[in-house]
Length: 541
Ligand code: VG1
Ligand code: CO
Image (tube, rainbow, N blue to C red; front, side, top):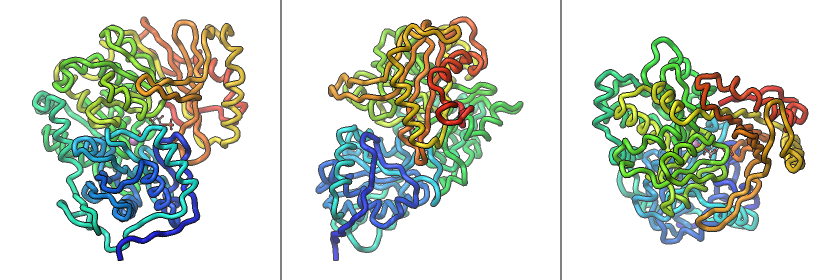
């Protein structure tokens, strides 16, 4: 038998506007659940008949089983060909690269990114477009709408493909090509960065520590840092992707990458430290005794990208998400290039890159990348830093000091309050929105509010609008705070408070101290403690 139509009842329930579906793994394992969503996804993108799709994921629990389901459904929906990473593995940026360079019709990426993995943790799935980027809102809304009307899905029933064997094979009427998940990506990195200069720096004694957090970037880190650039074996730690990420929470920030932080802040710290997340699109950069905030990393890359061969002609323009600090804006001004502000989420950068307006983008949430793919790219950011260090001969702390001396320092921090009851978080947000009109002119300690709004975005390329993207309160002198609810959490609501203050004189304060008056003003305005009983954030980055 070939194709089977299965009639189903349960609804998949993706939130409209979110770029994919993230739920507890056991929810995805429930009867017909994944199948329903995949059918809605295929229908929502206009069907997959005759199309070629890339399929792969970050290796978390259920990755391989879900990949087989997706392949069987692609076959039954008439897809011509699937390009799959060996053992169903592909980092998000590597998948984006394959979607683009192989001229495909898009791809399915299995990941819950930086969320923990395992049978009792999180799983996720999303569709990326032929440009390699996450589906835009019009498409995710169509997928969501389809989940509400779906009454059947199509699936090929037969023996699954052996995903460990490289080469081309057949699944029913569909061709399946199983590719090395790493090699095309290594070629791409080699085309952008000066591997010889980085290798020379490493041979000259620069020690590197890369913590892959038992997630997807281990094989990429080993192939590039150890095999291609000559760093000693063991440079990459937690380098084998595990279904439960070895119990680690693969979110590269000082809280979750604490082993790396301890090493980098210790006496025997190597010259460069970095970590990446579950699916390989995030990065954290650390120097000896020197944590680099993601907003600063974006600004340093903007100021120095021309030193890497792939960017020697300079940047077309830059973009940052709204809550990301304005450090990069100051660099763009100095370079005389455009700087765009977009809502949180990488999908908003795609149009700007496709339209040739920007070549570098970044978010405060440890995401940086360029127009080489249409996703943020953790390993890319790490190689960019190494290229800058190799070319300038400067250490991470030196690069930071020089940058702040030239541009001033945008002190920055994000405070996350996790797993708040949803109705309390909603009440907090609507209370805050209700008082925005009255805030301008009010004074909180030394700070006077000059502007307060709920951020709305007009896409300059396609004219689409996105509203209610985060409340921002701006003070005289450029300090500000931003509040929004996370769209990626899977239990309750996560409240994110973003804090920023520019200082052009005092460059080496502790960020929490430098931001103390902004933090106090934010609490007075928002009333987090009163609404949620939380008096301290769960994670500070
Ligand atoms: C978070 C980050 C956001 C990022 C998103 C996806 O979203 O804040 O900047 O784009 O995760 O990242 P939210 O809605 O929870 O704040 V992930 O690495 O898919 O990789
Ligand atoms: Co990610």
